[in-house]
Amino acid sequence: MFAIDEGPPRRVDHEFYLRPWRELRAMERSPLDLDHYPFQHPAILHDPQGKLAALFPGLTVLPPEGQKTRLKVHYLEALFALGRAAKCLDRDNDLATRLVLGEGAVALMKLLALACGSWAPTRHWAAEELRLLGVPERILSAAGDLLAAPSSDRITAVRDGLHAWLDARGETFHHDRMGPIRWAFLSGDGKAAFRTWGAW
Image (cartoon, rainbow, N blue to C red; front, side, top):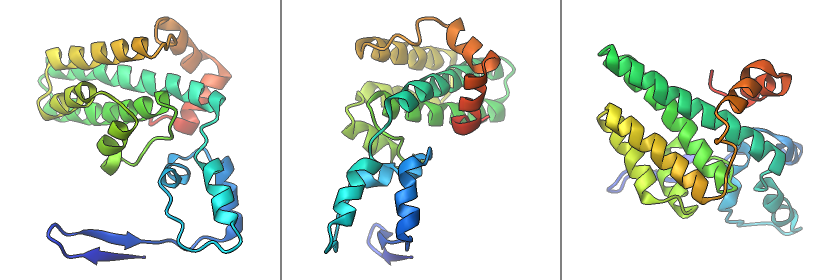
């Protein structure tokens, strides 16, 4: 349920969902970003027994093993999308280019959030949330420029900028290009990870 503030600008003033306590507790074990990300900015209005205040911090915790696995999943998704977009550009196929870049942008957003130790935000708040997490504006601008006007140079800029940012954060999983690919396509763990978190 929600209420609209007519503005301007017109926007959702507030919305709320009714959830049974058992369902709320079960979200601690959920692999879905939407079951965790919203609790990173909680405003508790009524909690006489302190149950919500005790539960919410745990809902925001990103398990380290899940984080490591998803970094590989979304890195490969983003990298593959950039490569496919370059091929689509060579074929002068504008629709296919934008379709794969859209998928790649979602994967990139998830990768950036996870690398910062956060569950991924919703798409329509991704830029604001990534800024709050400290993702540099140059990374977000490069991705936006690529989506607005795809080109080979902009694909290279996004890929190189991502690798430089991961390097600066001390990440190394992307250095062995074939390792994650073999993991994704040949191992049971990799296949299961893509079934859980991948878009394809």
